[in-house]
Structure formats: C-alpha cells, structure tokens
Image (cartoon, rainbow, N blue to C red; front, side):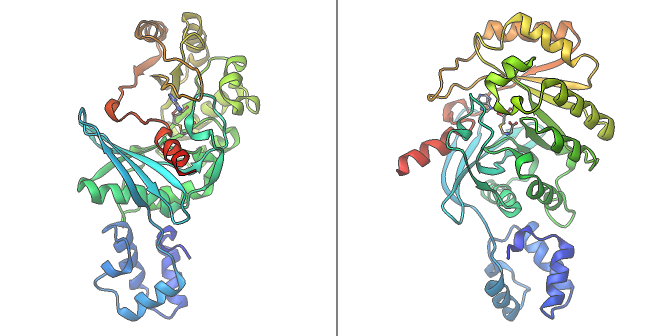
Length: 343
Ligand code: SAH
C-alpha cells in the first residue's frame, strides 16, 4: 500500500507477486530512495504497464511544503509540511561545518505532555509512516540541492512511541541503495520510555541516543515531564547503562534550563552525582519559552555557572548553540501557530 515504506526484499516479493522480474524492485527502490522521485512519472526506465499497476495498488506518500523560513543569520531553514490527510508537521535544516543536518518529526503531535513543549499541547494526532519521515529529508535534499549527512529525530513527536515505524525508517535511510546515511550520523531523542530504550539497545545500532533528562531527581522531573511518573530517574539511568553496555555508544543527555526551576547550582551538583561514571555528554539548552506556559529561560550567568559545576565534576558538557534565532519557531511552535490559524 505504501511503496516508499517497503524494504528492498519486500519490494522484490511484491514484484514477484504481480509477475514482474525481480530487478524491477531495485530500480523502484533506487528511484524512490536514491533519486528521491516524488511519483512514478519521474521513473524513466520503468514500463508504463508497471507504472499503472503500481498506481492502482500503491500510494507513494510524500510531504507537501506549505511554508519555508530561511534564517538570514546562519541559513537555517524551517519547513512546514502537510501530510496526505491534512495533518501538519515541521522539519528543520541546519548547516554545520561537518555537513547538513535535518531535524525531523516522528509523529503529528505528541502524547508525552512535557510541560515546556509546544508539540504536545494539542495531544497526539497520529504516528508518521516511515515514508513520511523519509520524505521530510528527501524533500529538503531536493530543495536545497545539498546532501543531507546527519539526521536528528528531535522534531515533533516521541520516536520511541512510534517504535516500529522508526526502526523501519532507520533501515531505509541507512540503506546502501538509498541515501546511505551512516548510523553514526543519526540521533534519536527520547523523553525516556525505559522498556523501548532496552529494546533498542538489543539492536546494537551505532546511532546516538539522546535522553531528555531535564532534571536530576524524580520530584522535579515529574513536575516537568509526566513520563517521569511512570519511570524513575534511577530506572532511566539503569536503562542507559544497559544501552551503553550493549552498544558502546556514548549517549547525550539533554537538559533544558528553566529559570528558577532546574537551573540552580545544587541541581548541577546533583546531576553530576547521578551521571558519575557514565560515558555521556550533557547538552544544556536554555528553554525556549512558549506563550501557553510561563517558564522563563535561564539567564546566561546561571547557564555558565551550571556548566562550570558539571565540568568541575568531570562531566562532558556543551551549551547548545541556537540556530535560526531570527526565524524562531522552535520546538513545535510553528506547527501550533498554523493549526490555530485554521480554526
Ligand atoms: N520526544 C523526544 C524528541 C522531541 S523533543 C524527546 O523528548 O526527546 C526534542 C528536544 O527538545 C527534547 O529534549 C525536548 O525536551 C526539548 N524541548 C521541547 N520543548 C522545548 C522548549 N520549549 N525549550 C527547550 N527544549 C525543548
């Protein structure tokens, strides 16, 4: 049904089932995942009869661009896309010295309920199909005419709440017959769904796992993130240690600093204590205030102080550089604005 979500072996099976030669499967796969074709019209070496058969039986899901904002400061591009059923998602393209990175959405909306996040305010609409995750990257690579080398799943949605589709997406985006993006250049960010972290660990992928921690203890984390009521910080960190043992990959902890809530020196000390001995890296992000909540961004002095304390305790730490500040619509705010303007 959804041609772009099929793996090469599945396409082979499909070709055989409709009496076609197997080599057609590879041709189709390359049209979709290497040449980033939007429809069968672009597939030059595919016979008309096969094209019309495919059109009858299959959908080629894509994303329709609605808006694109380009930063005059650093060239960051923010895209608002519409899906086949009218749902709206956003993606971001960022240019770094080491290559171009795309931040994609994994769900339309989100049901995790993190208090500071705009993407969760309207709840979850639906999971994205693997093809819809791929199409964000494919569209952007066609649009910019520049190779995408890195992918981060930090847009709208909780990737581990759409686990099977995300796994299939990973298989397709890293395929040698497709864009062939290296696992090492892919980051999945999660609010911490413990059983899924353990399941993912067993896959032994070389991707980077980023954990949205945001608090050093259960009480504070529960106030910021409902998921913390289900899994304690200790359970989460134990799953992280397991992930590390299985994959040998250093993980990232994201920590959004909210003024007066989680940004005090004692919080930094507590955090350093909890991460002691774990091969990791902490990313400090001054929270992006959203108008529906009155969380305020930490002042630069608190951010620096927080960083210093972590460093003193031998924790690797960086402050996230803000990209596209002039087109500020981070963390699902663009999507939300568009949805609200519709009603
Ligand atoms: N659901 C996943 C990925 C999407 S959010 C997760 O929770 O990790 C990507 C990152 O942005 C997460 O660390 C999230 O906590 C953070 N984030 C969301 N809203 C934010 C805001 N307003 N300011 C700063 N960071 C935010």
